[in-house]
Image (tube, rainbow, N blue to C red; front, side, top):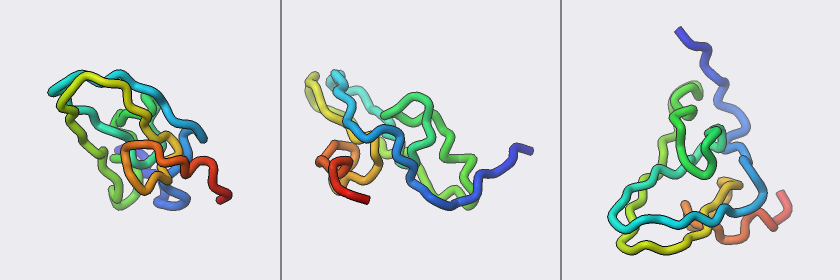
Length: 90
C-alpha cells in the first residue's frame, strides 16, 4: 500500500503565474485543485495520495475553441481561471 501524504499545507502553489491553454470545443478538462500534479495545470491523480482524500479534480467543458488562462497557484476565487490571486501577499 502506498504511503499517504499528510493533509497539511494544501493546496500547494504549483506556480505563481497562470498558464495559457488553447482548449477544444466539447472537450472536458480536469483542473488540478491540490497543486501536486506534475501535469499542471491539469490533474494527474496525485490528490488521491493525500490523507483523507479531501481533493478532487475540477472538471470543466468548453463550448468553443479558445485560449484561457488557468490558475496554477490554486488560490483563485474563480477556479479554474486565474483571477490574479498569485499577485496577492500570502
